[in-house]
Amino acid sequence: MVKSMTGYGLGFRNGEGISITVEIKTVNHRFCEQTVRMPKQYAILEDAVKKTIAEYIHRGRAEIFITIDGDNVKNQKMVVDWQLLDEYYRVLEEMRVRYGINQPVSIPELLQNKDCFKILDETINAAELEPLLLSAVVDAAANLSVMRQAEGRELKASISALLQNVGQVTDQLKVLAPKVAESYRDRLKEKLERYTSGLIDENRLLTEVAIFADKADISEELVRMYSHIHQFASIIDETGPVGRKLDFLLQEMNREANTIGAKGNAADLASVVVELKSLLEKIREQVQNIE
Image 1: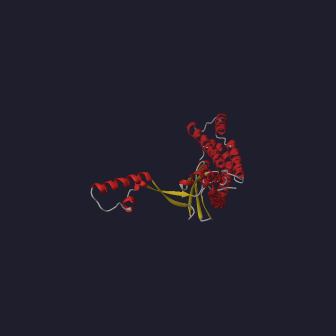
Image 2: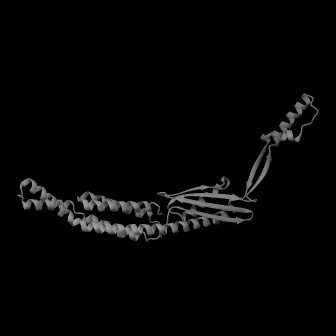
Image 3: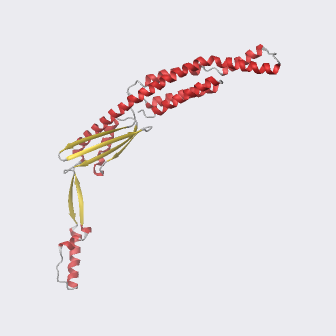
């Protein structure tokens, strides 16, 4: 099944005071690449997230955004450096006595010493969070896959129509191919008559035309082009990723089109080759979106 490499998927799960939202955005890429953005305290789960998504995505660049919220996600705890705070208190008391200050050391004064206090976040254990997180990831990946399949169906329909046009243009080249040598013979004969006052060596003329016809023969290229067209139509119906196969096959088809254009020294054939290249370029643009 043809799948597009672009898409979007959203997954959401709740459980025991925790809510998890997973967003996946994918774009074209030559290989499969994943970037995960999630709270750093749960980074240990990143590999599990990537492995889960890899079951749904085989090619393309994926950006995964994970948000974890809830009352049970984070608890804050104050840690006091009592040894350092004692030292602050001792110094303040010493200053009070030294300078005759009657006012005792107060709590607000001690709290101003920020070096003595740290706020730590106590988070839920990553292992406990993993099942809920991966469930949300599966939901997002499944929704993404549905979108990529829908766009893939449209791409396939468009490419199949263009491929049919490529076949029709190749048929035109097949019809025009024998006329290339005939056109060359007429042009050569006209030039010879102009410069030899009508005296033409027919044997020499036939020899020159035969040599040209051999050089301009595009029958092998046409056979290969037809073969590529049939292969392309077969591959696009396969299950699994087909983008790379189609991309390679298009390179071969372009190579045949260039060879035909170089060999076929005729205006009519050249214009058809230009049309053929234009169709192949349109297909290439579409294939760049296929997984």
